Image 1 (spheres, rainbow, N blue to C red):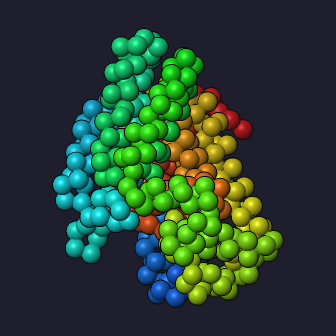
Image 2: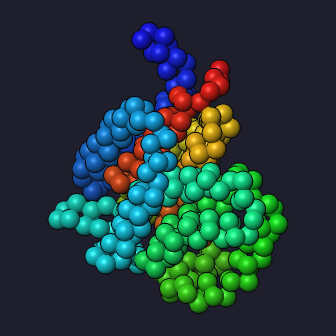
Length: 366
């Protein structure tokens, strides 16, 4: 018994676990300041409860062999797609997308949990077909299997979330050994399909692209968010204006300040130093994810961690980029920092899966 306990403690990635706890606490701190004028205790309570439940789920997941999820991948796949269909049928529209399901005063975004399910399913499906992944017919099967949920999300329409799915699916295929020629073909096809994508966008989505290309085009209208965000980040300078003291944040100039634009709050009130601390924590998290993916005992586990790492990376890059005006606005939240019970729970579940795979790897890292 003691031998098993010692083995578990050696394999458990305390660095990753402590990092996500620090990130979550950092997020609660910034959310408290961002919502100071909106009864911040309600927001803090929701985020804190989600974090505590998430930690409990992590330890539950540590007692489940991740191979179990692989055996249930078809069931998980069906449930995920049914959830997305349910959203289209009875979902509530927010910010131009029908992506939420509401029950009384409770609401959640199924796509956040579907991301996790699809990463598991795609990882298993790729593993089952790994020996023929570069055969055209097999690749077509894998792509068809992987992109059904992407299509359902595009129908909502939620382009930002669909982009996240496409990114982690492509990275998982690349890590599994997909020939570079297929990646080149996909890039060419993507470029050729840009006119079709453009005409399929809604008006507000086109405005976001126009505002990205020309930030001063409509600063009082569709470009207002990004302009106020850039002012907030710039105002923070090196040391920030202090928590609860940011002008753009506390006087209500910054929209979506506790969710999509939380990094602008952090930049204004904690400055460059606060931003660097956050990026260092994210760097440590990503580094540990890469190490665990490399040392996983099988392709299935490695691909799950790869998918989660890719998902986290695109969330971090896009959120910080759009906040600073160097990427188009897509409404993608910042992991562990942005307010949202569903989003926080999904992040913690992801880390639970990663830690599960970590403790079951064959090799130890010191």
